[in-house]
Amino acid sequence: MSYAYDLERELPHRPEQVWRALTDPGLLSRWFMECDQDLASLPLGGRFTLTDPNAKGWSGILDGELRQRAVPARLVYRTDERNGTSSTTLTWTLDPTESGTRLHLHHAGWQGLRGFMTAQFLRMGWRSLIATNLNDLLDRTQPDTEAP
Amino acid sequence: MSELVAAHQVSQPAISRHLRVLREAGLVSVRQDGRRRCYRIEADGLLPLLGYLTSFWDQRLGALAAVLDDVEEES
Image (tube, rainbow over all chains, first blue to last red; front, side, top):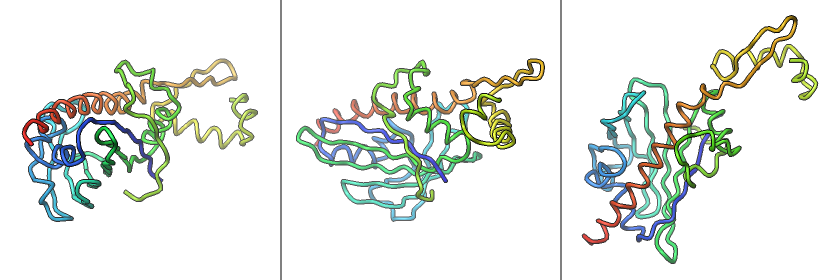
């Protein structure tokens, strides 16, 4: 059993633009993490590395494997924390809306008691415990039966 | 602990095992009060991952919107 959380955001930009921000290394480095491959052209199954030079409390390096790509609607990749234990899957879904794009992230594969508790606490709305302003970021969590 | 057993219709040994796992994970702490064992939830055990994820995505998705404004101008 693994656990997942979801977040969703409405963006006033076309899915093709959002797709570029999710796949282009130059754009990824500006908002997400540094990426050593172009995810728009990397073959399925291809490996890539995501790096967060400012990471605290973990290595900041994720070894990625591209799993699914449907332009410009769905991007799935697995990330293994280097020198760590977490192996999770990110599923980005882009749905066109009248005003732009609804971007949805399903972040699955959280294991163990801490993963379970984190997902449960988020779902229960204990988010106010966190000093950070959550806004609408982590709206729902649910048990995930998909194997990571 | 007797309150937990009464509330959950689970045997005391089962409750004890659950609490031990939670204690080892740092999610609850225990205090001996005479013959009673009092457990309390330790939110600090959860906050590192919970706090990291929420601030990570808060920052990242805020930055994404700004990047997308630039992509719009380029295309």
